[in-house]
Image 1 (cartoon, helix red, strand yellow):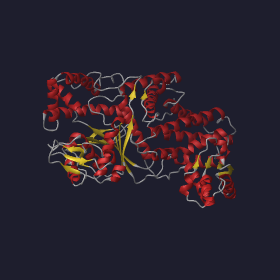
Image 2 (image 1 turned 45 degrees about the vertical axis):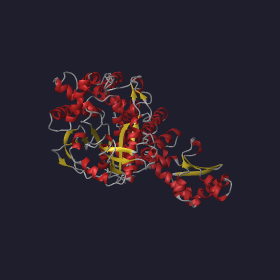
Image 3 (image 1 turned 135 degrees about the vertical axis):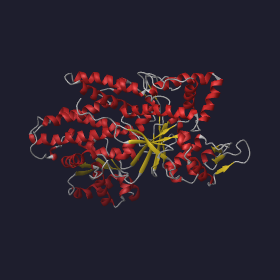
Length: 639
């Protein structure tokens, strides 16, 4: 997005002012004071509170309540020169700061309405580049609702990082050399099957075929042997197996992309595993690895000829009986770990990009997605400051191992900036989803979206009986898509969730339709206003409890986005990503607007108050729209 309009963070600006005044009154560093400033749990105790008196009490050996009183006295006069601040009070050891409601409303609403679609964006991370890999679904079946959680989390992470100033690149990894691909290729080479199925997307057809083939693989030793031979042949791009795979994978991936587009998910790049294997990237990685003291080529033993990394120099692995992790086998082929480490090195620009790219699809957002190809052109994908891999929580240990090996190779900074965004699986009313068992049938992402849209249309038609079918279809699609995305985001990624229709399509509760409806309600107020406003609004008139609560929530939006980014912290489980913090904020914002709508008449208020409240409605509408956009939820103008 364009950044021509200067960005503003109203809440952070006012908080920074309070910190500055506290620093002047105490002669302490701003950083020290910042840690002590918080939002009190009870608004009657102030809009901001500081606990700095506790820290000073230890240094000065004085009663913290007396210290707080002294600081409040020194700040009282200074605050009078800051219009946005009202007063400061000491209550025991606490310092409570109150904002001037009218002035703060003016400051916030002017910022939100002045910035428009840019409101909520900051330049905190401008100049930084982030790469996100997701969802990496095998091109052998359709996405089910569990895959959709991966995709929605990755896409939303990219939106949030973009809003915080990052230059974001979204990449999908295509495993076109895996055993699943070999099984399907074997089936097609053994008994040719039609490439098209009537009334069925190709990925749906292929997924059902895979369920059948899996039974042969598990119960027929001869079939298993033949399939493993096909897997070997896939490495040869001139083989019949590779040619069969190329057609099949392309058709399946195009079908999967249609599902992604329905969710509003787009990528810039696809990295196909077969192209990595033939690009020279792995050879370049091996040469770099062998220059490291912790990587050796074994000369004897069971792993003679293998290139391994020594793990016993790391505390976590020092007691291992076998301290070696194979990166390349004795026959020169890479292991999964070796390939993953090489790819991570490529993402950070440690390896000069040897890949070539060509257009795979022209996406509905008007932008091309490029795929790796031996016949493509060079493309400067560039270096990245931080890399995120969105993968299920069961991959926590393998991901941690990759980042550890990166550190052992001498790339400590890159290791620290490698993040595993882990997530738990999705159940559908207690059903575990499995590709090989076929339990996803009926719960593929397309089927879930179809049902969500169908249920949404019933509600939209009930509320708008006189509207055209085109209107009902369009709004139902927006509501259905939003319902699915929000349901997958509103729980912390580390929580296993159960997808329930009653929760996803709740028009009156913690669900996307409720948020979309609040935006549409605000739009309706503005439409009805017509020419009611003939003079500039006096925003300082917005001072009631309900109005001010909504103003404060609007002011906090840019900070909420930043806090999600700053909360990306590593743990043994993975890197925490509090996407649910933003859904909670959005739901709270909608609730505050509902309270405002019920208790503060807009169109029937006296002209001066009506003009001010209309500006507040406009600021809410803009903030809600921007928040929905970051979450990837369609913005609905009328419901």
